[in-house]
Image (cartoon, rainbow over all chains, first blue to last red; front, side, top):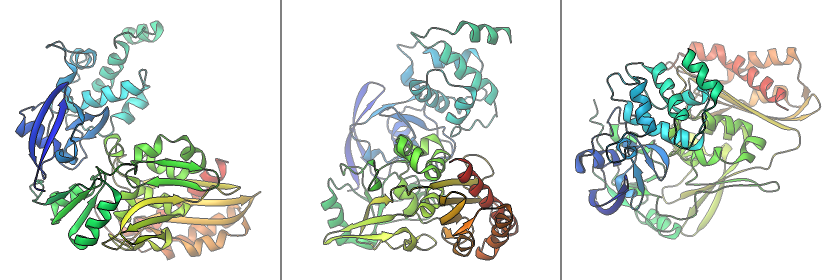
Length: 171
Length: 289
């Protein structure tokens, strides 16, 4: 087949689409649906700018055929905001100024969400390991790591470890 | 430069194994089989333009990683690197493979790429391929009139070419159950953490006290396919591991390999470090007991 009729559940909304089978999920999100928050970086699965969650797993949407995504639940970086309010991860990136040109930020936020879902209190090493597939061409990694740490501390329903939090404030 | 846009193709989405092998029997050579797609789609963005792409996505029940102490480890065609890492028995009984999987590419790729896909790509640099070659195992290939097993030792024929016939589907990899006294380790060198290896090595030893009863060494990025270091293995088999013997192994490796200059390293450098990396892998395997 050359075209496929698929249903995607993107950020909680159902989209019924007809897609050409040689279109990647990224191309469908950006070009067919106008959801440009997910970025095109390398196109070969190295930079992570196009990271989205598919059924809670972070993948590179530039290396996924949209036609094989029928029925899947997709979350993009915009999906974490609630009625225009930033969530704790987005807010932490903002607060820590973990954004230079901003191009890698949507992928970083999606990958951070997938990390914190599995590991709510990651060490710095675990954060860096989790973000190894997300390249920041501005090289602003220090602030990104700080933002992930802040996102972990400020996650809803989390009790802050008082000592650790105070130490970081003191620094 | 490539546009990095996928060429036109016809997508085949079989809903069962039977349908998949039927399609392979009909179209054979004209089909590129895709599981995770992290290699296939990149190749298609640059050079390859298959008439048909057959995705395994719709075939149920091939995503398993199952360990049995008597039968070994069974890995289905759709099991991702992340699925492998989620199985604690892999870390416990196949540490070389677990380590190769842990450092494999990036988290996003590990969530998509499959273990069997790494073998079928037949790249000399595949990290999981290297670990699996040292451990040993067999591929199960299915076609319409039955299935056959191919030993991993006979699987890679040349760069990018495997023993799989165009009408066959690789459905499972079986690793042998861990032997008594078995140790394994995997090591590699890269430019950056998520880069392809410039050199990788895996060792599988069976130890009786300090004596090495069995040894399998696999090295990647030093020949057109992953390579067994059979002459070097023979030096170790049946002997006690001593510093002197390890020094002889280090000397032996360069004569077994045929590395090339490429964008990741040079033949000269690879030759120089190959023996040392093997030695470190043996030391790591022994110390991890």
